[in-house]
Image (tube, rainbow, N blue to C red; front, side, top):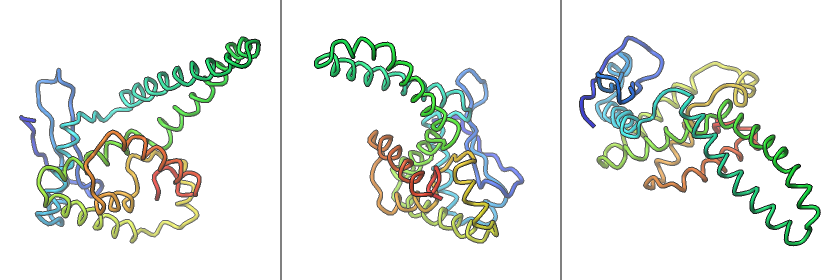
Length: 224
């Protein structure tokens, strides 16, 4: 990573974010911090925030939905093909004539299933966005040991601020399923950092199962 700018903007919303540009842009990437973060956060928290955003840049987490949607389509296409071939092969062994009918019916059923799957993945619970945040947290901790403590302090600060909001419960409940969730819950991110493990590709499967548990138990798509 090189040629990364550090910018300050006047805002009181997100404490900071990574501004990632495609390779063909002449200017490099940037990390944007808000004036509120610079004034209120400790040096340890700011260092953790910058490290987190640096990991977004390192992983090229472009901030547009098209890339994530393409990844979802590719993932579901190959998963669907493997499942389809396996089911046909299994049924063909025992029921030859039934298999011939299912060759025509199964693709339609599976197309509907994966259409719903992609819709939920892409438009509702923001699975790929949440993966990016957890990956950035974990990779940032690998830079230097102090980053993990800084991230924990930063997330707990954000948690306290969120608890101070006066949004009534009956408005929060529908939002858990209706709005776009780009981050997993602060509680969950804190839990993962407290029980820190290096990032691995197993996390993709673990988090998918976790989001299903949240959805079934009434915690929405992000565990809020």
